[in-house]
Amino acid sequence: MTTQLPDRAEIDATCKVIEDHCPSIYTWQYQRTRPQLVTLYDKAAHSQWVGATDLDWSIDVDPESLVDLESPNLRLMREVTKMPGSPIASWGDAELVQLGMEMFAALLSQFMHGEQGAMMTAAKIVDSVPWIDAKYYAATQTMDEARHTEVFARYIEEKVGEAYPMNPNLEAQITGLLEDSRWDIAYLGMQIVIESLALAAFGDMARRIEEPLLKRLLRYVMADEARHVAFGILSLGEYYEHLSAAELKDRQDFLLEHTVHARARSTTPEVWDRMGVPVGAVVPYIMEAAAALESSPFQNFQNGFFAKLVPNVRRLGLLDANDGYLRERWGAAGLLEFEFAADTSADYATYDAVAADRSAGGD
Ligand SMILES: [Fe+2]
Ligand SMILES: [Fe+2]
Image (tube, rainbow, N blue to C red; front, side, top):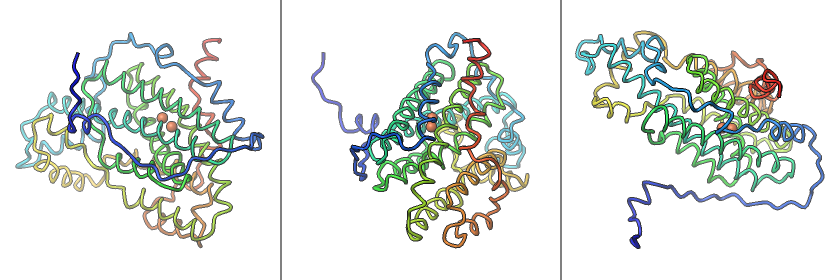
């Protein structure tokens, strides 16, 4: 037994303290006045699944099998190995597979950290949203996000290896939502931006991999995420009808800040550390190879993200408010291609892999 307290560095390494500036709201209005949220809440209650028993953790996973050498990202890295002077010029397939495994672990780690942020954001919404129907729904989401965090953490630990730290951009983004004094910003940032992004990223990974445990895990998580995005659209659509032009402009600027201005995805420098390559030495080669290929390795994923995000934002009225302020800027950035795709409040049920598996299993 020890009585010694952990030192400051140890505390800093294991947790982060965030100050929330948003007031908590107790409501005395218990009447259910928002039928679409009632439906969504009932659906969420019925669609709960259990990480420990609905997924088959006995499945053996070979981490190498998770790597696709023909993925756009690794094709790009192969180009980097061919460039004169490249710090990875000596690499062959074995090293590329190793890199692919590290990149996969880094991405899954961001999913895990992001899910914890989503759990805290959903809990903040329980606290701060003024409507009882939305508090009820956000409580189910908090549980969903706990399950997502738990299953990603378990998958990494049991099947993949050591987790990576949180990407500083993602950390700053979620911290901002948790600190903000305006309750709707937590919704807009999480339910509309980050969860639209998560749906695209999970979908992209689920299509690429064959590994049955992770594939099912992702399908189940997506079933929940689609509901979360629908929750954001239904709640914010109502709230934004009553905001002033100046307040709507703030929300439009928030969306610009989190899309156009933040489009450059950072690499995870720790991946290169683990591969024994100085990140500063390799990044210029990656940029040059990407320019030569005339395509971003993230293009499919970006398309998937905006195909979700733009219709959802249009549905909220934020594309056209203030004389089309956001429409003009997203249009100039080439992001409006998917404007008229189905928004997630209309198609969330199509993601329900949990219900599909249950009816196939007869229970
Ligand atoms: Fe989630
Ligand atoms: Fe979510």
